[in-house]
Amino acid sequence: MRKALFPILAFCAVLTGCGPHEQGFEHESEHRHEHSHDHIEVSPERQEKLGIRVETVSEAPFSEVIRTSGQIVSSVGDEMTVVAKSEGIVSLGSLGEGSPVAKGARIATLSTRGVGSGDKIAKARITLETARKEYERDRQLRENNIVSESHLDQSRLAYEHARVEYEALAADGTAGDAVIIASPLSGFVKNLIVGNGDYVEAGAPIATVSSNRRLRLRADVSEKYYHLIPQIRDAEFTTSYGDKAYRLSDLGGRLVSYGRASDGDFYIPVIFDFDNRGDIVPGSYVDVYLRTAVSQNCISVPLAAVVEDQGVHYVFVREEDDNDCFEKREVSLGQSDGSRVPILEGLRNGESVVVSGAVHVKLAGVTSVPAGHTHSH
Image 1: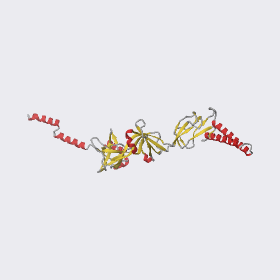
Image 2: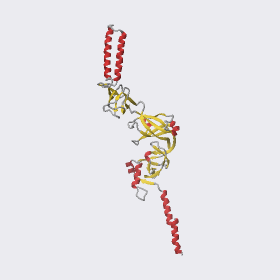
Image 3: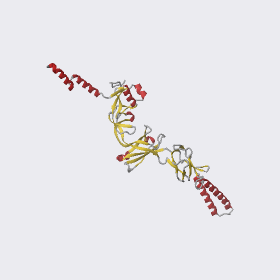
Image 4: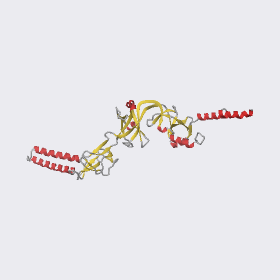
């Protein structure tokens, strides 16, 4: 009877997990759970070669940030529209959008030959020359008291009118019988409004020229942040064609104005202007991070310190007693300001975090850990 019961009791012990072997396995499982963090070893030589750099973190004031979208536009006064001085047929030559131009350089020429009443500049030139000769003749006659003073005044007036009309047409110069339209400032041709061979009336826009010296950032802020708008002190933005973050205070930027009412789409415009350092494209759309005067003490790290794996964010913390060993630590993030991000959970004051080359540490952990091990050597 005892022999029959022994296998049954042993089988029940296995099912209930009360056997000695199962207890040891459970203890080992708990031990593994307690040390579930990934540890990665990278030698000092490889750290220097890969550009891996650490930073000791500590709590510091971090401004509350409003993240939104915006657009870069030309600043007022740094962009001008070139208009036709008279009606005529446009000739742009080889000029195209984006072409650099100097102040006074030719943008286009206008010719009225064969159009309407004929070549206006030729007529103006003939009228001016006729009026000048008439005025010179009357001056000589006046010296001999042959004509009256009033007649001389009328002759002078006719000459001045003819001169003003001709100079208005040929203010930027002439090319044969065509009027030259010149650039009012140095910069580049932002856009051409007409094409070669188009007929335009006097005052019609020909092109837009931008000096590109000062630019404006227009950020569209949701109505729910209206109470924070008066406290905005600075901004950062990133472009779609690069990963660099631009801080307006570093570009001589300033807050110009902000709307006191919604534009109808539940957004309020906030306008900054700043110096263009040559690598920012006017007209481009950007991601904007508006910094307010409201701040709180917290630990923050550069964006480059954070890596993502299947939607979970991590940083690499260097162990206190081993400069070669890094721990992959899961963290909870706050709202980034475009260059740094606050760490809500996962880091403590005084810990050393990889802030440059974090992706190399990640790859070292992926490629160097053998199956069944937690360390790379």
